[in-house]
Length: 286
Image (cartoon, rainbow, N blue to C red; front, side, top):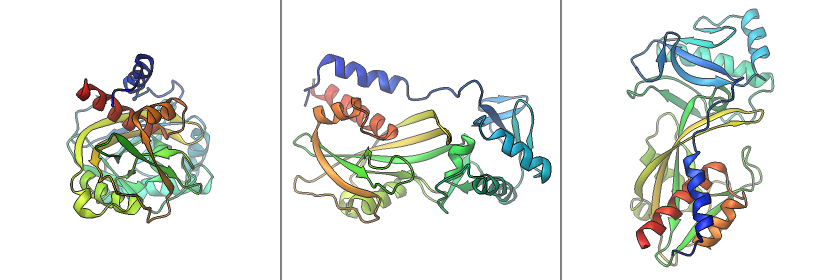
């Protein structure tokens, strides 16, 4: 399977070395004050997100007119004060709804993501569409489906998707909702997106985690932990989408997958996961 030239390998390796980009200098930091975490804590609290400068005037006007008790906007930061998770979730949802009505959060999903500190404690949950708006760290699962003969199955996202329509994706991928684990999300997504039955899905191998951070124009700051799985598929297996989120599948060689990554045909997340798979596969065959 080692069919890549050195320049292609180097390009993929460079991609994986730059997965977590810093927030732009003009993005406003969001701090969580309270809780049990010692990760990235300053006198302001724990840094948990970033606000695009496009959003700040609207939020400032909204909070001046109708304050939210545990959320304060300052000139150099936004502070979220610790409260019971139910209360904090309600207040952050209030702010997110205001921003949605103001046109700053497209693609409202009516599906909640949860925010956990580094000790695994959940402090709030809000609609998944708002996580990028505030730059909160979310979680997702990505599965590379491959065959023993050396091919990779890729899905093409539906044209109706609110993010990255028609771009190439992994066999299955999706956000981990508030009441899911990475493993339960993986099995669900494999069935919904690719029609992989449970007895095959249970053979998926957890192989690592990728931390991705990047600003997204007019959408906010994408900060996500990608839980990465490999799944060997039977040679005669044909993926079939069940949830309408995938328009079709293609089976490609490692070399073609690499070329499509470098041609910018993938979603950003799937490009990293596929590049990681390709490089790991090549190393094991040398």
